[in-house]
Length: 112
Image (tube, rainbow, N blue to C red; front, side):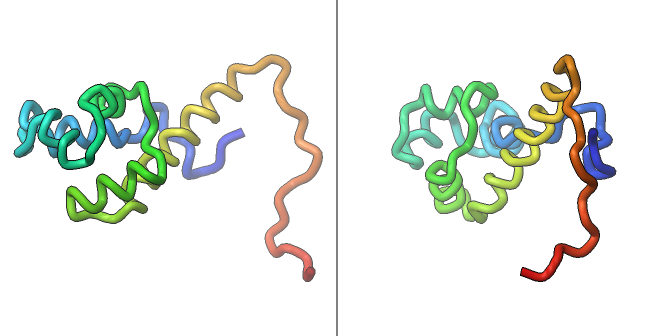
């Protein structure tokens, strides 16, 4: 079911984990959840949900985080996407009965 890039047995780092360990003061960073929430113009509850993995980073939040933290929105969306795909693969592997593959991926797509 998984391809070579999906062989890890543990989830990739989530945006929330990154914020918790690299940005927020309690993880060794430089700001508090409250300060981050104020800078993002969202509630502390929203920041707390992201940090604890109960809310995904949306495109809007990725743009806010990028602006406030001097990064790119793609960084945040990529972290979220990798986590979402990992979790989707895990969930699909546990389904019964498994999916039936109708065709293999083509090396070169046909001309349109």
